[in-house]
Length: 521
Ligand code: C2O
Image 1 (cartoon, rainbow, N blue to C red):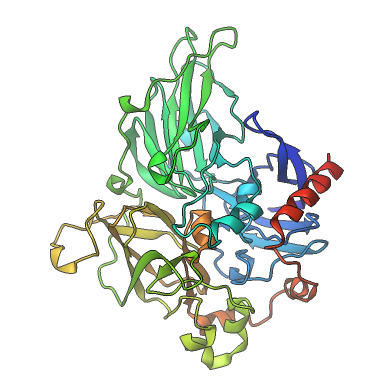
Image 2 (tube, helix red, strand yellow):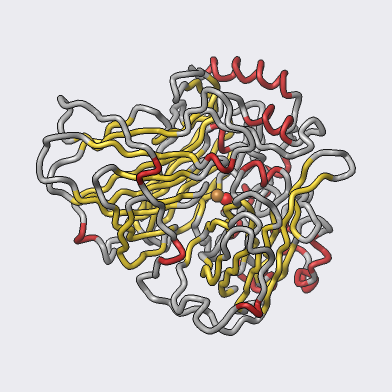
């Protein structure tokens, strides 16, 4: 069936951690924004109107393959122009994959201001559907008291030569710090979890309840027990949790930000958010235990339920050496192979569609899109060497990749001569967002079977802003045929509307915003 939504995107006020009332980006005057739900095979038609007045926007449906609809993927300057204030844009695509996803703005560092929500695609044929009685959706996230625009301006400035990322103030679950989830005894719940944060990975555990992992980033897994999971920004896990047989007590669950990511740990940080499985609302909600009592689960050991074998024969291997460094202006940037991503003036998709046979020539996409033209049906391998002492969650649009290899931290660049038969799993886990260890490396594989323009980037929003982004231009000639009937007129209309600078005067912006949010109150 077809599911229609009208999303009017505008500023509202919210105070999710009880410490700071601030403007946040809501939908139809509400924040948190709605969860989108659909069944596998449904068509989603989402009419977005930008009522922000001072910022452009866009929506990306994270993890959705957009097979045949790359122009609905959402990243600004990649598959569309940004949607200026006062304009509308229609996202129209089918969802042929079950699982736990999310949607978020893909316009300059914007989603941590609140434009982020869950996207759940139900599967009438789920192999797990007889294993649970009900579903629970939990979104974990980090929260900043300041707006992204001023934070981005100071993060990217010469007064921050070390590239220290702003540290969030609080951890949230379902965009609050006061969440009770009513459960019944003797039942099994499918708990779908998303990390919608800008920066922090989250350790998640449920006290005295074991998780059985059954889905990761939309891919079904062999059910696997875990007492704690580690979920980077943008990752998802679905777990089965069976409740106790009695209502004798309530139990805490925790999202705990990985503070190793932070250069400084400020006073007043709320690194943990506690919620409760409430069996009996008249009973107390106990405090959570210390994190050291649990050990996180290694996602590399998971096996996909379809046991898809390792892609053996690699047609094209791409090595990305990443680092963070200063350019001559003194500000900190992020690099793949010594290039920091700079968004092109014309969205990369339009270049691919309008250049005929030249679309296969990487040169036409400009010098700073970190572009790779992939040939149809080739098996692509990405070797990513993290020459940085930080952890990074890498995400590929349009695909779930096989995680063939992940080194320990400090292993240095990937060395194929160290790999023996059996180093790579026979059936590697697939997912769309993966952690790379500090000064470590990772090997990802996928088949180029989805013509489109797909970003590959670190999902830490600060690092997107500092250029840790590459562009995969997949089968551009097939893409031209696929979209030969053109893309809807409305798609181009937003490019014609007058632009607004998104990196405006930070102080001025803040004042404006409070007025704008007040208007919507
Ligand atoms: Cu969650 Cu480029 O995306």
